[in-house]
Image 1 (cartoon, rainbow, N blue to C red):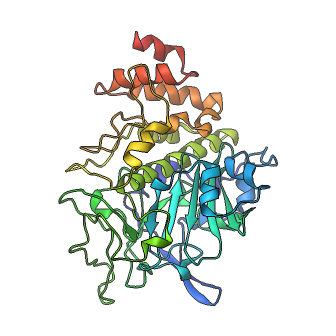
Image 2: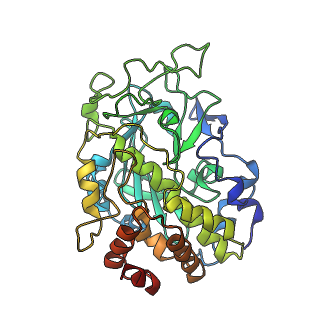
Image 3: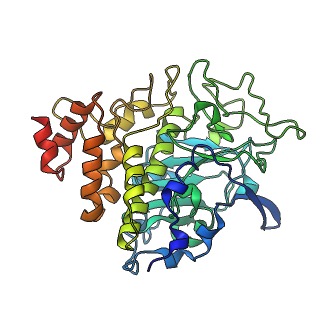
Length: 403
């Protein structure tokens, strides 16, 4: 089924994560006023979610969460362990930008845990947990976790299907201007990824890090209602502990690691781009422009440089690189740089994802060719050698390039 309204050209959307504001809409939820992201353009939401699925979407979702849906689980630690999600991936958001907004605030942030395929949201005292899994054919699939049981929650696509997710069901990281309660200002909200200038990132998030003099929006509130876009950032940078902000004993870790959050930023939009070009191809929509955008993103084209080195405060910097393949020289696409850029080798580790491997050949072959042609001299040989040792389905001309 071809739905042009739901698949506006990506070249008209690709700047949204970096610069465009995302207006907010107020809705009544459970008797309290809740602020939700309203994803523009509105035409993207004109068609119901199911009408945008691939023709073969009647098949059940294929993701780790779906495979656990019949299993009784004991709680958050059990859920994370079964899904192989590391606790040190924890990132904490205190802005009221979730369906559990009434429970979230600076004294009670929402925790996000993630791996390459799944993200889990947990709010102390909340009504269950939010779970999102990347499905190779359907994009992000959403669930709730209550009383040990996982249940599909398709209503989540009202906020997770629009311009912020490249026009497909997906996840995203937002940056807002929160007031003293955590409610975001009606202006200034953006979606962030590795291209976003450091100064615009993480409004409404707690971030524990050491990152020198470079400024961001993290850990700060707009305390003056007369100036809703002015954050009180003095003394709020380079926090290494959050014990003065809230009761960290209610969470699985006392940190909200900057490296984990930067990784999640990159991963969310990478997954959305892969989902998008797969769906477009299966529906017969031309993908040339979007293929170029996807390749550029995979190669970290336009990545915002780090003026100073950054340092996380959890074990994530050490454990994340251990979760992927290494070549015979011990190198991995998951190795961090953290001095001038996020990763040492500028090709996304999401090339190993099941979603990438599930791309139709008519998409994957031209994408491989564009990636190969676009590799810059700096790091080109390293990347080719790493993939030759770690990606069995790599086209033959890549291997010839390594010789």
